[in-house]
Length: 170
Image (cartoon, rainbow, N blue to C red; front, side, top):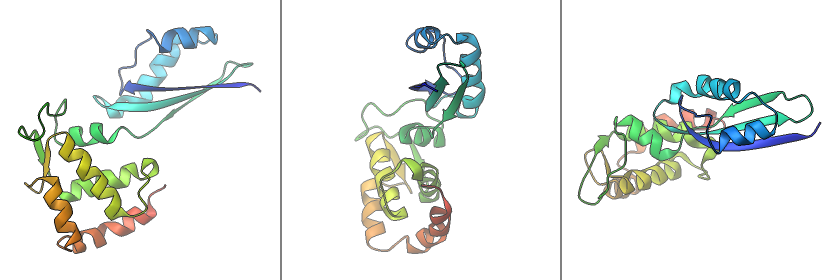
């Protein structure tokens, strides 16, 4: 059973049959419109976010399986503040603010894709991304929040989220 795997990034619910997806699916003998519709159906919950999609195709039977990954960290952070795009000048133009709880929730969602071994490390990674796209956390520069985490200011909150982190796949 020869299989072909296609990995693409699509905007949730808005995949298009044009290049590069359409021609690739067409070459494999698949109904492009049908596959695109299924991709849009399974990614609809991520509307407005970039989502990784993997399509595994059995070349002999033309059957396929669509797997949806977790959206990018930037997409999840932007959605959390209802923003469309990152700040063009994150050092001076802030586009929103998140609570550390929201960052922890996103870290747990992203656990399978993160290389972080601990919740604290994952949160620090997300704080770095938040800073780079112009998002403040707890009303402060995420760099300052990282210092406060290191000083133990958020230990209670982190302890509360540790169980969720440990139960998450990844």
